[in-house]
View: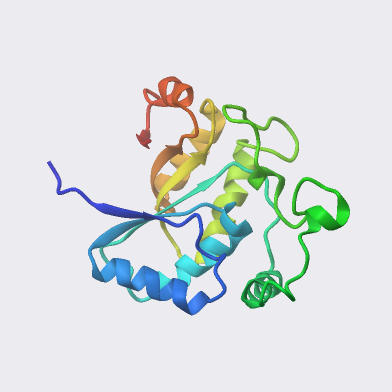
Length: 206
């Protein structure tokens, strides 16, 4: 049996007011023995992957980088993230007002639809929510590699899938055989999805 590994979830990475502080956090985790770092393209609309990629650059040996795809998300441009960081650093008295109060909307219009709160136990369906087609996931893998500045993803996961599409799995296996990804996994969001998918051939991580 292999030795247990410590992992760090990176859902909040890319949202703090200081990118340097976030990179120091990752370096501290590595120094403490953390070897698995789990992110997703939807986290911070791409910002989490970008920060993680910068943090592991030059320190990749012995680390496993895991990410996920399947949500439809508009990638946040670096200038948008810079504005968000600056706004977060302002005192509350001069910080831009909550757009939900200003417009009457129930969400921040800059947030991807998939990141908005939804009732427990429900999954978005169709346009704007999730897309597990082979074409979308292939594009998502390419986007994750670009944002992180990596040539290889150790674990690539279906993000919140209720079932595993055969064509999409076949495409990810092709990428695995080409050395682009190491293992295929599922980032599960409910127990029923785990029950439905955990026996799927070639699914190595849940």
